[in-house]
Image 1: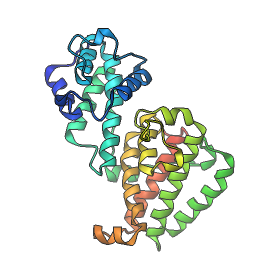
Image 2 (image 1 turned 90 degrees about the horizontal axis):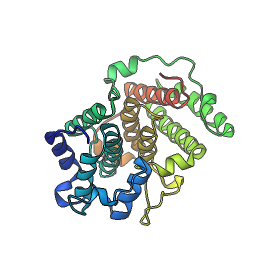
Image 3 (image 1 turned 90 degrees about the vertical axis):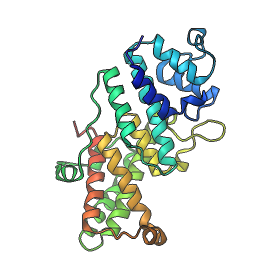
Image 4 (image 1 turned 45 degrees about the horizontal axis):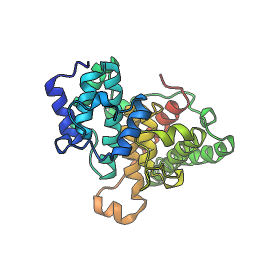
Length: 275
């Protein structure tokens, strides 16, 4: 039996929309699949039916039946799905309610939540010996990415927009390259983008945001890099002039420095050079 308190359960119930009997946007099939992949559990087993048969009631029964570590693992996966849904709808995924639930998951699993650096601290971080050659990607992609990285650095002072666009391009190329080396893990992630048949979409149909979220869910991108990577993605969208016009924001050298630092941090995470 988990140690979830009544008020903690209420926080998750509100976040996941469980008052309706549903849990997020899961169907019966996808709910069962999520539990199989995340916890190797048949959530439709009779042991989880004592409260009723809806998805919400089975999740509540799961909370009552299973130990903290397992409940924490499942809740962590559900939070990843919630975050994915929020970003797809253009909503912020780091709300106070989310932070509260992340803290609860940390207590259940015994793992402290990932620290998220403030912007100034993030920019001050030094990443030594960053090398694209150390990334787990096809070696034929390395010279292309290295050339773009060199160009992004050269453009920093006099062409910050070019640096931003190049950083977004490089990050997307790297994450696709990593996914191609680990297709099973990326496709089976709880928050991987699915088609109408609930099958993982081909990688060429994934957005940069989806690559970022799945990479974080798999533990290969830290939380601070995920957060700032989404900012890089947003700035990269200024490649469309009307998008920049609508935002009434002109990126400058400081903006480009943030994007370049995000890219360096992501390379460090993905190459195992950041502890």
